[in-house]
Length: 238
Image 1 (cartoon, rainbow, N blue to C red):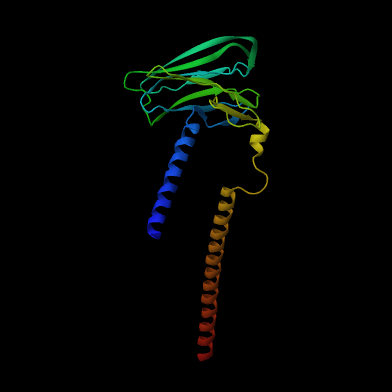
Image 2: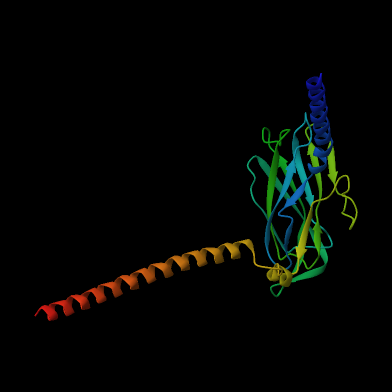
């Protein structure tokens, strides 16, 4: 009887976990930008990661809109096998000053379209790399994206984040931008893991070297003292 009750309890627990995972899973399966942070004023390589949420349809197209309030002078894409890319530009009302030159036209939208057989299948994902810079002096860049499926469904990842609020239902990919000084400073509360590891390695290797030198000196002193004793013995016998 007790064994049957335990078996039923275990089955119910497993079922609850499966249901919870089934509910929570899709919340994380949205279009993101990776890495999700970079440095203002620098050049960065990011990738738009696109998971396929459908159980029956494949993703055939991705449209990414670059933020109008954070224009970037230089944007280039990396070829993705089986996908074609189209870049649309827009004219700036206020030119960007980059390396002493004025830039009046920037990339406004990038569209990737899959060739037959290269679609993002159910249960898989695809990344679309982009290099861009100099990155604007903003706290973040919000890329509104549209994901098109083979059955005609279009998912609009365009909801902007709300500071201090919950994640929206269809969040747009967000790239956080840190000031150059903050990024260079890094953590100041203590040494990093690598620094500690390097210090420990140096300490152990230094101790080993010290012991080796001490042993060598002791050996040399032993030879000298032995030689002196041998000479004294010869002189005494003579």
